[in-house]
Amino acid sequence: MASLSDFRVQSVPTAQANPAPLQQAVSPPLVSSGGSLDSMLGLLQSDLSRQGVSTSSKGNCSACQKPIVGQVVTALGRVWHPEHFVCSKCECELGNRNFFEKDGRPYCEPDYFSLYSPHCAHCNKPILNKMVTALDKNWHPECFCCVKCSRTFGDEGCSQPIVENYISALNALWHPQCFVCRECFSPFVNGSFFEHEGQPLCEAHYHQSRGSVCQACQQPIVGRCVTAMGAKFHPQHLVCQFCLKPLSKGCFKEQDNKPYCHPCFLKLFG
Image (cartoon, rainbow, N blue to C red; front, side, top):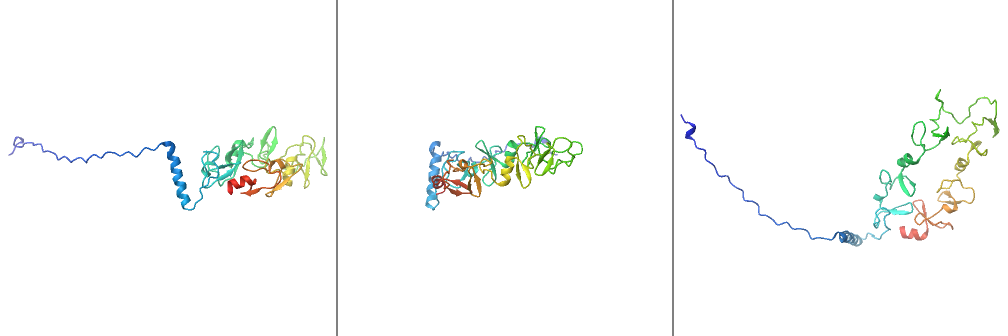
């Protein structure tokens, strides 16, 4: 019988793999950061020019101040790279979307209404169309209702008997509190109102109903009026969309339904 003492443990030399020859790292040539971008842009423009693609600058982007060579967005009297014309709140691109301007800054439609539209005292949502002003608050017409029966106060009148003071207007009798603008339900505080198609209206909604509201400032046009691009303007509000100079003589170029003076049009689109 063999015992453990008959066995010897021998160390077996392990084979060592030859290490891969070290390769000396080669550093790329240093390029000064100041000139690298300009150099790359220069090469790109040269390549595009050889391929027949126009590389003339269309102005500097209002956001990044870099030249615009390809597509351009013209808005708020300035030019932008499409990817840089974004909502001032959520930063979504506005190139193909409706946008609103506030203090020279663009906003997408949802953010503009959320930030700057009046909010309903009942549901706290933005009021986009008709608005009722009552009890020193603003309401959606459908939200301004009786707290007891929940019925809305419509625009057809209350149909209740008149037992005290009344207003005689438009061949009818009214409670003083019921004789209001048919659009915004605001009372005629100064005693004057406008009539359109048999309905009493405030001045703003009268001009809006007749289409005599300035396309630029959304205020009623009472005196002189300029008609251009299917809309009406105060004469001082029909201006070049780039340089903002008045187009007093009515001579302008149109691009994307926006007016430009001849020099700015040639500079941007010529």
